[in-house]
Image (cartoon, rainbow, N blue to C red; front, side, top):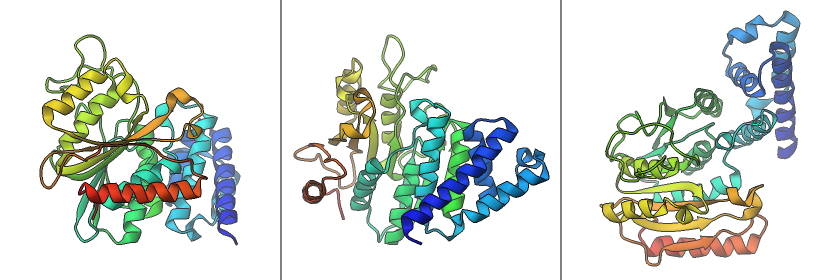
Length: 338
């Protein structure tokens, strides 16, 4: 069976089981998906056991017919991503629940692979791991390359971290996941991470924070993504790299001066800012960019020039090839690749 047909079949069967669960148990699609992931992981769920025998048999048989376990890890990731995207749309979940698209994940992965030395043991953190698609994309690519890496994920939403845990288990990935608020009570990962990736949530942080965050504004609430950028820099080892998906207008907001002041005060190396095609976003105001920031120390230097660019559309094959070549030269020139 061609790859796309196998993926399509798995998606349809999983969605059929999910729909049956949502209807019979009268629960949202996202909760039904958690039960599907548990069933695929051969775990019993109390809610599943409430179903009558005929419904349980239908769901087990449907998931068996999905042939999910015969797929490659990357095919499994694609299936899970597409089912997640459909689930988010069905439940009309807020923007911060959205899955990081592959067109963005591939660029994050490109820079991670360039930066990390495959001959050395590395530590990678996703500080807002969500449903786990971005970390899975990076993990599978490094695994295929043969890297020895420890993966960490932090997430404050219990539904999302439950999904991330299920995704990791189904893909055979070993992640150290913490269900915590990364800003308030994250475990001590200070000065340890070689790379931190994140698709940062956008909005205002609603809680009072302990003194010490330089990006906090004096009046009103602070942008949560500014605070998380500061937290990311704390977790990186000297010379470590942050690859953070941020609003494309990051440096145009009224709080941008506070963020830039923090960069200056701590000597943070602002290495690059790569905007993604507007076509990836339904609302141009919600467009994103990839921020490359490096912690001073080790062999880190300020990039010359800072990489300010716009990534080509996914379908522009020649432009993407040229862009990759341009990036590889820039990374090499600025000691950001191995």
